[in-house]
Each structure stands twice: as structure tokens, then as C-alpha cells.
Amino acid sequence: MIHRSIVELQQAIRTKQISPLELTRAYLDRIEALNPQLNAFITLTAESALAEAQAATEAVMHGDELGPLHGIPLALKDLFDVRGVPTTAGSPLLKDNLAREDAFVTKQLRDAGAIFLGKLNMHEWALGVTSINPHVGPVRNPWNLDYITGGSSGGSAAAIAAGLCAGSLGSDTGGSIRIPASLCGVVGLKPTYGRISTRGVIPLSWSLDHVGPMGRCVDDVALLFSVIDGYDESDPYCVSRQNLPRATHHAPCIGVPDAYFFSDLHPDTERAYRAAIKTIGELGYTLIEVALPDFEISEKASSKILLADAAAYHEDRITQEADRALDGNQAIGEDVLTRLRWGLAVTGVKYALARRTQIEWRHKLAKLFDAIDVLILPATPLPATPIDDSDPLALSQGNLTRFTRMFNLTGNPALVLPCGFTRDALPIGLQIVGAQWREDLILQVARTYEQATPWHQRTPPLD
Image (tube, rainbow, N blue to C red; front, top):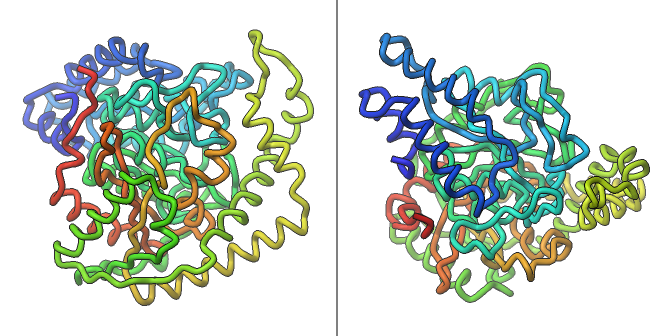
């Protein structure tokens, strides 16, 4: 039951094969058994989860109208406000930061009937891609406990892969949903910039932050996305739905990018990527080679914007907390503090040039998606690396973000799903990118590919 999809669990609850209370207890038992190894949770809200599950069970027995997530146990990255629960962003500086109300997306999940199990571990302040957190310890990859999960939504990916929750929400500013989805073998969607409200979510970069769903399969992510996909008039970054494109019903045309995206790949990643391209072609899609010259320039622009925005948000903390010790540790982790200081060094001229690059690449991708429907490329150039050998600065500055940062810069929606495994049984992810507001096409291609391949059916060797 633990490894069944949300869609399957939803049906089991509605037909009374299992109650929300039984399901929640099963997840809490599994968290108790496995979280000491994985370190996926920062805060466990067992008491309130059981109370919510009891109420959800009574609603089923009374024949009440049920929401699309009725009785489904979820957990949230610890950037999202859940009323009455601390939101720490993985930092000891916010250990007493009790949320007074739900984030906009938290409320949408709650209104749909979801049960909240707790808050998930992450890279401190979301500023990194390893989820090696110096304050609460690293999140460990369920496929090999000595390896990183990726970040910054590492706890979300690990918890889903290990069966500690049915689904989660993450945030993505340079790849923070898609990288851990790839490294942990789950599905993660970064929607179009401005489509999902970020109100009640601690920011990293106002210009690049995205909120999105993570799940065990494409259908789960699509369901979670449908629940949180609503306009929030109180969020200045949320965009109105007035001009949403109409759904199309033709077979999407798939763009396969040029040699840059095949260079310097881990051999197992290249093998899996080439096999995925072959499979997608065999499924009847038209494959078109496309060129993206100077793609690497986008990474430098994205980094400048992200770090400058982060430094602006944390300016007081950088000056007031940098040298303070908490519980024997530096109040801000060394890798995060280093990058925040880099952000302070970004000049107004450099920031302006980076924003110009952003506009130019938005235009280039808009023209590209006039010729194709979706683009497929690797999620990461390499699989998970050992925790002890992972340099958070090197991995954040390009090694793991090489193929993800661009789509934060341009705001295009992008989804990652499993496309294979290394010879050492570590997951490998495929990234599918679409035009602005065309999550429907991304999900369509991802669903078709997933149904034709076995990768999403595998589970980590934890039991």
C-alpha cells in the first residue's frame, strides 16, 4: 500500500479498501522505522496528522463529499508555511518561526483533503543542490544511503522514493525540484514562472522561484498540480489565467538538442538519455534536431540573478549572523554563506546584463517552441555522488545545474521523470521542457513515456 500511487490510494479510500487513518498510521510507522537512516524529516506532526486522518475517515463513513486528495498523507519541504508548525528553511535561525497561517498552496492541498505528516529536510535556505545540511544532517538517498539526494528539495524526493509520504511540494530556483527528482528516481514538475503562488513560501530569488509538485509517477504530479494551480490575487508574482493556451490534441513534435547536451555526460547518463530518445521515437513522436548555441551563457546569468536576489533577502543575516555560533556550529553554513557573499559582490551593471540575457533567452525559447512542442534533454549530467565526496559549491555552480538553470531563467515549465539506472543502481532522470503555460503537453509526453518504460515501478532496497 505504501508504494501505491496517489491515484490508486484515492480509489482505495473511496471504495473503503483502506481508511485514511489506517493509511496515515502506515506512513507514520514507516517514518519511524526509516527516517533515522534517511533524515528526510525535520519536523514530524504525527498528532495532528492522526487527528486529520480520523476526521477524514469519519467523512468517508458518513458519505460526505470528498475532495481530490481526501485522506492522502503528504509532507512539505520546510519552506512552506503550515499553520501552527515551524517553517525553518533548514536553518537554526528560524527554529522558532511558527507559521500563523497556511501558505496559499498549503491551503489548496488542505481544502482538497490532504493530511500533513510534517516538514521535510532540505539544503539550508534552499541555496544548494546537495541537501547536505550542516545543522540537521544530510538527507540520504534511499537507493544508497552514502549518496546525496540532490537539492534543495532533497527531503521531498527521498521521502517519496522511500515511501514516507504519498507526495510533496518542492521549490525550484535553479533545479531544486528536478535535480533531486532525477537523483532519487521520482517525478518533479517545475511549472511556468508565475503560474503557482509562492505566497507563504520562504523565497530564495523572487525573480526565479517556482513552486511545484513531486510524486511517485506522472499521474500523481498531474493531480497535485491541478490542485495547486490557482490564481492568487494577493501574490504579486502570480500571473492571471486570462490568456491560457487551449489544449491541443495532436501528437507533440519533440526537439532533441545538439551536441552540447551529449558532452561531458556520465557514461550511464548518456546511455539512458540515448535510449530514452530512441523509445520516444518508437512511440510515434516526430523527433527534430534543434540547436541551442551559447546555452551555457544562461547559467552565468541565472547564477548572478539568483545570488544577488538571495543576498538582498538575507542582507541583514549576512552582516549580523555570519560570525555567530549556534549549538557549536556556524549560524549560516559555510557553503551557503560563501554563495550569499558572492551575491553581495554582484554589481548593478552585472545584474542588469544578466536580466538582459534573461529577456534574450526567453525570446529565443519562444521562437524555438514555435517549431517544436517539447524539448527533451538530460536532467543532470551525472547521477548522485557520495556525500563525503560532494562539494556543495562545485555542484551548485554548474556540475548538477548545467541543464536545469536555463528554464528558471526563462520561466518555461519543465518536468523530470526516471529514464534508467546506473550500473550501481542509482536513478537517472529525463527532462521534458515545454513552451510557457504548456504543462499539458509536457505531462502528455511524460505519461506516454512512463507507461512504455519500467523505471517508475522500481523501489529502493530499504524493506
